[in-house]
Image 1 (cartoon, rainbow, N blue to C red):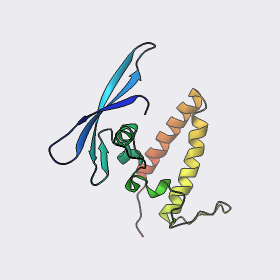
Image 2: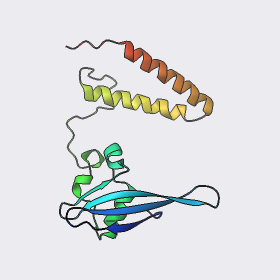
Image 3: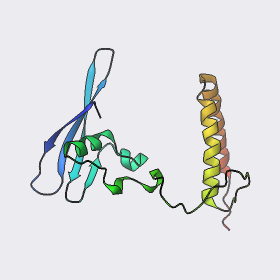
Length: 154
């Protein structure tokens, strides 16, 4: 947030529009800035940024955090803390990491197993340019094969 600052544009009714400018380095001595519109509705505790990070990643961007900070908000509104980021959430499933067998009929188990495996591939692929190239080629082959598979609904 250190590179962000905002100016407030008040509308007659409805949310307040903030223009949040973010400075970033372009070269070794040059700085540039980009402007992001952030809508803030204080009565409903709703914020929306045009960068779309919350919708894309599930956590608030620095532009929204800048606006919340400037408006005196000391806590992030609860609707912006998604259950996937919480430790105290009750999961609808429990992964047994000691067991290598998964229930392939369960889409959540399939997802978790594939995610764990693909993260191993990512870690290996990022270690060098050669490994990165091989990883990309192999993933392209996998995607092409998957596109050829006909799904049989049960």
